[in-house]
Length: 271
Image 1 (cartoon, rainbow, N blue to C red):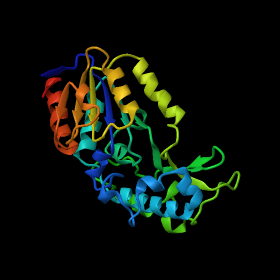
Image 2: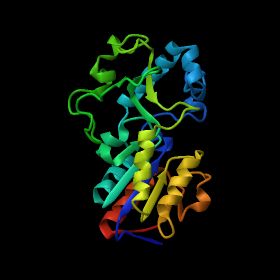
Image 3: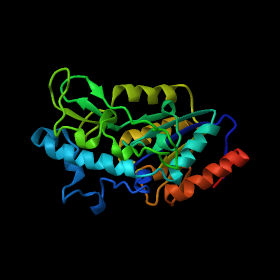
């Protein structure tokens, strides 16, 4: 089967399985547990209200682990695809910075579950947290200054207070991610909707996600409309599988570079 790319309008959706190949644990399975605690029970407003210190400790360790990780070939392949598509949008469920560090421009990316390196007030709308210098340094890693040395807004991690307070209202600051039970950010939802409303996609790739959230399936199906191609890359069956034009039962870091290379060379993909 060939995917014709005469217009080359592309949507890519990625989940935790893509980041897992860089050594970042998913929430599911025993490898995702932290100190014998279920991360799904830490990533909630209730957990933060009960023990904000514990939640912050977990997120600081997660930030450190992400800073120490490197983008994998799947991240690089997606960035390459974005360079060659006439229109491109990545919607990722991952809160890490591996996609932009692989070279994907931020304007072509939506982090629908937030950004772990942003800190925002739990009471008002104040937020802060820029990625440190040399943020977009690609797959090869940082040239000189390791981002692991930095915390929110470029501060040294060891200088962060245990429970950061909002400079406006003195409320507790929290990680800028979407927790279980919370609504998706309106601004990011609008960006996805704007892209879908501009027209159907020739190609939709869904990689490394269990597709348990209904909006992932909804966006994928709306994007392909009547004649687009939907490719699912996941080692296991998911709720999206029955809708996919083609199912690739491989890890994204193995399959995506091959698919993108064939697409770029021939302007069509044979699967």
